[in-house]
Image 1: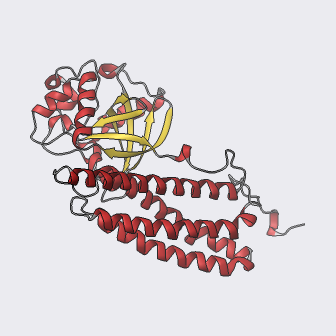
Image 2 (image 1 turned 30 degrees about the vertical axis):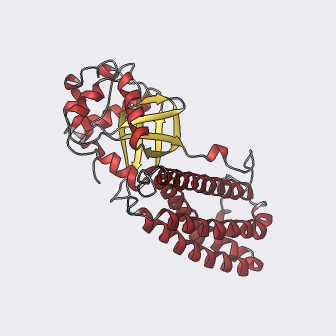
Image 3 (image 1 turned 90 degrees about the vertical axis):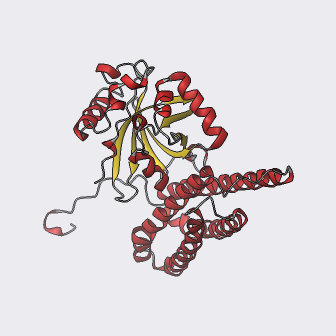
Length: 340
């Protein structure tokens, strides 16, 4: 397992004003056990830690390893910008980005522990003027980051931790059965797809405006669109893989009249996977990606997916509404394995 803690980026804002003497940031090779001690103290005390970090703004960021696929947790300082959380890939001014930054580029969905809350968020590195504005905001709260920036030739990434959008998704307010849960998941997928398409349209409109002013158009499709689209595609893959491997098999066995519909849904999963893979191929190099082609592939995915979700709900919701959610504990078998 790769160690995110190779670069300790715990910041106490009252001690970061003169970056060079912020001990944790300057010692890039602290042992993993030191990070783990902070994590354990944080979790045991409702998000509070003592010692040199007492009173500082601290969160725990759990990412998925870019290569290993394993979860990694690292303590980080953060700055608020309205409702958003900002973290900086400073690594104490080291010449390379910290491992957690590479992880969020590969897997934008992250888990954040802050105080006593645990949040599922999407990590979006800021770009251009937006990044510069946010970095000024960070430096205004924790000036030591300016020292780290002056000590390295790389641009310190500012990463915005955004809500996943689940709270704004369509679906029932109360989840009482598996049909409600499916509608909730489908609502998130529909909402995220609309959001990404809106972002893409806005990006292309900005490119057209730049072209009309004689300035070169913005390159590629942008990190913000990439991160949102990547998070969406990864969740879609997880959702459909889970259905194919588990729920569809159980439904087909217990409800034979649904087998034809389930076979069709499985085939649609494979079609959607091919379109999704074409979209992901464009995300591999966002600086060279053709935005118009990206928009066309996104529209194709949207049309296929919305039709798929509608059909799945039409066919499966009546049966799923009879299955409680969350599921209760398994019913123990009578002694001897026989039902009296």
